[in-house]
Length: 244
Length: 257
Image (cartoon, rainbow over all chains, first blue to last red):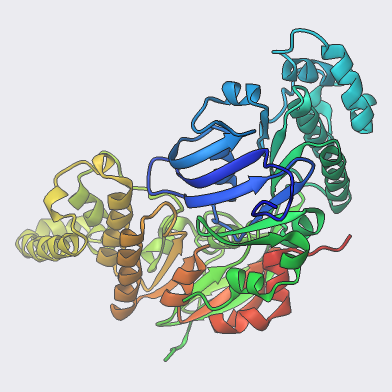
């Protein structure tokens, strides 16, 4: 059994990563694991560095210390296009689709590096994402927020990644769409993809995840089975309890 | 410990294109206190500050500062009344020298009339000399004196943050509102900022700090005001928040599927 209590090897391993935006580090010595077919939630109060951590893993910002491994291959500080080849895909919170292109063209772009099988992959994803199947010819910019998030996820899945990083997929969506997004995330995980998700709503993301990591002010503070964290009083302490 | 009510926000409401950012929000701040204004992302903290300081105009409600209504007044008028704010990213006069940035912050000279400057030119020069030595002292306190003739644009991020505190200290406001002073700040500078806030309090300023860094709030503030969905959901001692279900829900999120 690995450290996370999941007996499959990790598809993503983050080992003591420190990163920031040039000034003082935003995250320091952060470690985590993501396993195939499982949803890992990164939670924590505002300013914990959750999105920064995803950006460091995704190669959008530089990691100054520590290592990241995708399928046991070192991926630390690789450019995003190289990470894609290692089977890691990242769905940023904003600017995650091409608004002037149609849904199908967006998916084509997601499969740009595929030599063949693009149409077949789109067909597969249409099965997985019924919402997208209905709107292949629409411009991405004309989709609702929830549909656009679905498209961004589908686009990120074009290259059949082993790991998908999701940065606040339900931000700004109505409660109904938030539920739909979570159902979709669970469906994607059930195909074997390891998912690492950052969300504002701690309780909801723990409820839908297998494992949770609580980050506070850029540091690992607690991790465990998500269901257990959901009822752990210590988590509340980390958010609003006695700090000193 | 706390004095008279200095700031009274009553029933303040503001929508942006159908989204209610501040929703019938009321709070009071007593003179001489350091108040932490906290709450999850999107709670409306920054919008509230914009309304209080005249950067936005509310749909309804009132803001009284030492008894005077602020709604409808321009930001510059409000700041001359002694209510000064900062922004999440320091805003300095980039092309002015460090010392001139602090001088501009000092409103006393700005109010001097042309008449006085013509008739009492001698006494004004003396005032200016006193002024300069005071400002030099403030710059020394913030370790900026050696840089006083440099253009502010050349300062580091941390130094810009300190310049902001130097400006506030020189301006001697009655109320200071700090919008995320700990953003992008290293631990050493963080200590210095905590000290600066305590110094402001000692000098008689009342302070409101908007900040996500709760250990900092716990250490620095006399009391806290918690906002969520545009309104105040709790006020009082930081250590009582843990047992307030509404606050815990605001921070951990509702799971009402």
